[in-house]
Each structure stands twice: as C-alpha cells, then as structure tokens.
Length: 612
Image (cartoon, rainbow, N blue to C red; front, side, top):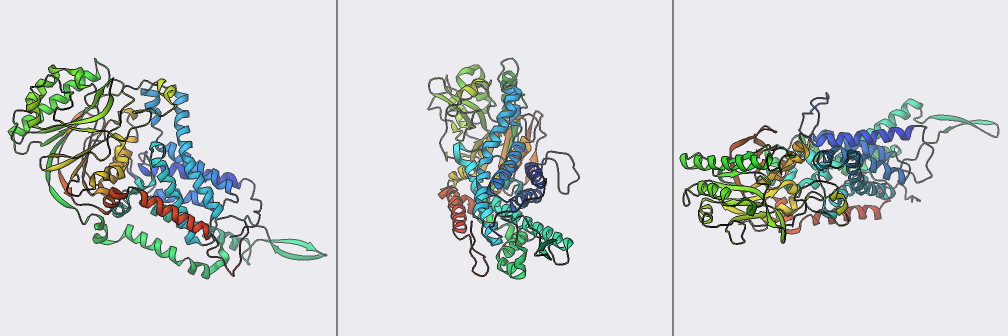
C-alpha cells in the first residue's frame, strides 16, 4: 500500500462507491429486523434478524473505504453509510413526532435525519482515523477497523445520555448467540466488524487480481509511450487506494497475515459448528430456580386515545382491573392459576391521587382475599409523583398481603404505603426528559407527562413466588450494563427480568420487532428469562437462551398465559459489567487502535518506510 500521491480515478467511479455505501447502510438497517415479507434473499424472514446479511452490509462499507484515495473520502463514505443505516433503523420516530406528537411532517422528517446524521459523525470520525493511520498489515487493519467501529458504537450508546438503538450486535442475536453471555452486544459487534473486514479484503483482492489478469498477460494494463524515439511498454497508473490489499505481497504477505486467517477461521467455527459445549459455555454457571406462572396483559389502547378521558383512560381503568380480578379468582380457584400478572408501562395513565378510593378499593379488595395464601401478585405500570415534587415513570408491585394492608389507607400515593416500587432510570430524550436548550422543540409537540425524574441505578429486586423479579421500562433493556448493576451481589441478583413497554408511540412498525430482538439479546447476555408486557406488542416470554416460547398477536387486546423458569447464577458478561460497566471494552478498543496507529509500518517489506 503506497503513500504516493493518488492517481486519478476513472470518471464516475466515485459515484459507484457512494451507491455502495447507500445500499450497504440500507441493508444493515434491514438486517436487524427484516422489514419486508420477501425479497428473495436467502435467510430473510419478516421481523427476524440476519447476522450474515449484516456482515455483508458492513463489508460493503469496507470495500468503499478500501478504495478511498483520501482521508476525506473515507470520512464522507463512513458518514453516508451510517446516516442511511441509522435513519433506516429508527425511521419510525417520525410516527411519534408527527402522528402523535403533532410536529409538522417536514420538521419530523428533518428531525429524524438530523439525529441520524449527528450520530453518524462517530462512525465518520472512526473511518477517517482508520484511513489516516492504517498499517500495511491486513491483520492490523482488520483489528483497527473493528476497534474503531466498536468505539463509535460505545460513544453513540453513552454520550449525551446515549441512543444505542440498532447497534449491529442485535442483528447477531441468532448467529453469534454463544458469544452474547461472554462479550455482550458490543463485543459481538467487534467480531462482526472483523468478519466484515476480512470478507471485503477477500473480495477486493479477487477483483483486483481478476482485473489485472484480464488486462494483460503480465498482470497489469500496458500503455505505450515514447522516450527518445523508442517505444517502451510501461504500467498504467493505478489509483493508490489506502486500504486495498497489496497483491504484490503474494504468498509471503499471506503468511504474514496468517493470524487474521486463524482468527476468522475460529470465529466461523464458533458460528457454524462449535458443538453444544461451546454454545453453553457462557451460561454454564446458571441454574434453574423453579417455575413462575404469569399472565402478561396487552391492552392495545391506541396512543392518540391513551390519555383521553372518554376513550383510552376509560378503557384502561376498566379492562386492566378486570383482568387482575380474573387473575386473582383463577389463583384462588386453581393450583395452576397465575402467580404474577403484569400490566404494561403506564397501563394506568393517571396518578394514584387522581383515581381515588372508588377505583382502588374494589381492586385491592379482590387482590386481598388471600392475604397469607398463594394469591396473585401484580405488577402495574403507572406514573407517580406530583407537580411539586416531579413525576417518575414507575411500576408498583402488589402482593395479596400488601393489598390487605392498603385497604385501610385513604390514599395510596404516600411514601410509606409498603408497595414494591421501581422508578425508570434511563429516560428517553424529548419523550421523558427535555435536554438542555431544547425546551422550544418539545413545546412544538403534544406529549403528556414528558419531563420525568430519574430513578436510581440497580434498584433492589422484588421477592415474590420464590423468584426475584427485576422490572425495567421501555427502552431500558437497551442498556445491558445498567441491568447488570443488579447482579453485583449474586445472592440478590434477579432470577426473572420483566420489561414493561408502550411501543404504541411508533404504530404498527418494525420498532416492535426490533425491540423484541433487543430483549432476546438481553436474556442471553444475562442468562435470565425476559417477560415482556406491552400495550400493543410484542408481548412475549423469552427464555434464558433467547428463544421466544410464547407470544401474543400484536395489535390485539388480550392476555398471554405462560409458565417461565427462573434462573440463578452469573454469566461472564453479567459479572464483568456489574463490576466495571463497559470500561474494559472502552479501554481495550482504544488501546488497540492507538497501539496499531503508533506502529502503522507494521508489515512493511524490506525495511522501507512510508511517507505520509
């Protein structure tokens, strides 16, 4: 790989690479949860992820980078790829901003594109650094690319409160499942980036060798020039791509890059073979803790009616208490009745003080009929707080004994009511809290209860029916390292995870499928079942291996009855993230990228140095 001034590319060739970035970004967005019924592509099922197509998509970016002749080209190609990928991943924000938030359509589109473009800067900077400091060694190039890609993912996930939706690791929830309890979603993204770089390098090497072979018998296109009247054959100038494999290295170069070949071979073995022992390695320290019978409620209340007194509020205050009463009756009348019933995020869309005893007393009376027996326990999503103290997006947990005690209280919204309480910790920007300097933007929208207080990190689990229950709300399950904070003490670690969500903000869109894949990956990482109770979908039961064992049809009103097996023990991912968060990934990737950059002549031949 030369550092001489680049030659001139063929006219129109730059446009081809832009198209490749556009197509690759769109394919990567689709690979997380395939949005179409059928496009004839192998392995594509609507709503399901595909790890192989994600690797192909990222390899398309690498190909465009390998033929970039300037750092600026690499920056722009990385930015275009990431912008298309991110906008194609969370385009459904338009629905919440325009359809339900009341933002003008043009401004909603501009907002989604602006968010995608801003987040894409992380990746653009990484690709520029790669092209500026890339070494000759293919192995070092691949490791640097994977490290910089992972650093961009981590920055997007954590800076400015973080928005990691659509990280490439979620497309790998099936293909790289054995790696999830070991390295987590961002470690899986590192491995996917390494495979993508390897694939692109093989393709570009084959294309260049084929092109040279077709050009002339000597392997390079020949031109004729005249020097002192003598016609001499000379090689035509070639564009000096900064990352393209150097074919002149031949077999010696291949041997020098044997390490990369071995790493890729080991990765492929772990994905397509590996055996049962390898696939169970990450969860070998976990064990069953018994069964839990659950009812998961799905009210299917339209978002534009959810906070309307005559429609959505009336439906919620009627249907959810009715289901809880039926669950209590089933628990008393049958040994197979539910032990836990879960209503989704803001199932009750009013503050407890706004409801009064006419609502609470009949419900508490039904739940309290067996205060010391095996009655039903209830998790209920609702807002808590006041105008003076602020609001929280919360969950209440009621046992039969607690319901019996609360019958004597005139008000439930007191600090000493004895209920289990969980307050959402990771809030959604603009939807649940207003970032500094953006009050003007949220004032343009009609979003009720849009400025919540933040709950604590690592709140205690709820001991019920022989299990330790840890709820999380909405997109909190994107942050596995935050859920892992509850695993610091293995003896108090949750045995069952429950996500309470309201994805009705995004209509009947691919967001439902994407969120299901996110929950599946959390279940594998932490070695715990994940129960999902949602307003419109996907209401589902996911076992500790990430398999959806039960699922309710989306956009319907009903309950999902299932039995789930709790788990104890700690996965490696839960262990190291509970202690250090994602710092090991930050430090490891940053150190690797800087080390390779500082030794960028690695792989040079004949002691030649390269001039920048």
